[in-house]
Image (tube, rainbow, N blue to C red; front, side):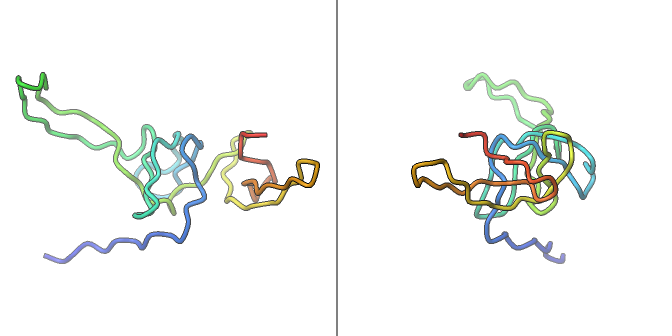
Length: 122
């Protein structure tokens, strides 16, 4: 049996937990969801309501686990999603250095398409 090829992990994932993303490629193309978890090492994301799989669980009365088939999210590769801006457009992520005053500067994530700041903190 041939070994399944895996996409290499990206150098850095610019997406963060809580971002709203749109799936651009795959069986869930077009779906929107919130990022629940980011795996930097493998380059994968857990997105709410995307890449649903069925998990077969055996009952275990000692641990109060009721058996059956449960549906849950699986991970999706970070290259297959794009962040969604406030007006609903999918965009890549860039960085910009902003001055806060008093000589204080910080690096913020911005949407490349609209220039909108994605970081919530002020």
